[in-house]
Length: 126
Image 1: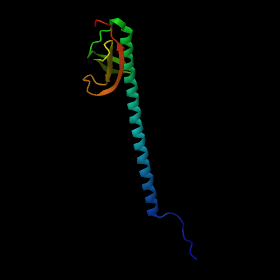
Image 2: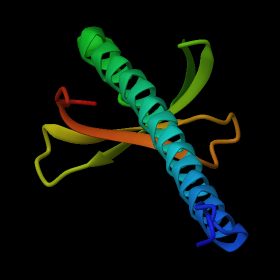
Image 3: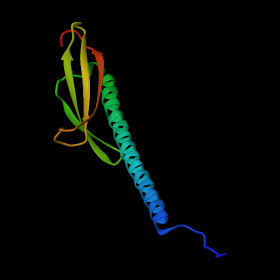
Image 4: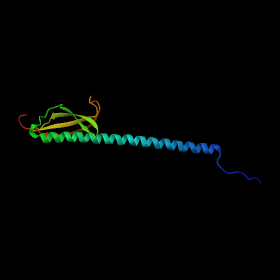
């Protein structure tokens, strides 16, 4: 009777390594996708704060707010400059206007990051 050594063949080891490599690649891709999504959520959160700040400023101005359509500005937040533009449109109700604040990451305002809309009371005679 021969004493036969037990163990894995070269083919079995190669198959096991291939499976581990594929699992590692899938895990790395999932991690990369997760990081991209977190970055997007973070960016949209900051942009929403910029839009909310702009709307709060307009409300605080009260009667001094001119309701100018297309007014632009920039705000520094989280170490980045954000660019905003307000869009003011009339509504069927004469006393109200629709105000949308669009927030961009780039000065050329080509890539909309976030927009926020509200309705504001418009003083008579404006």
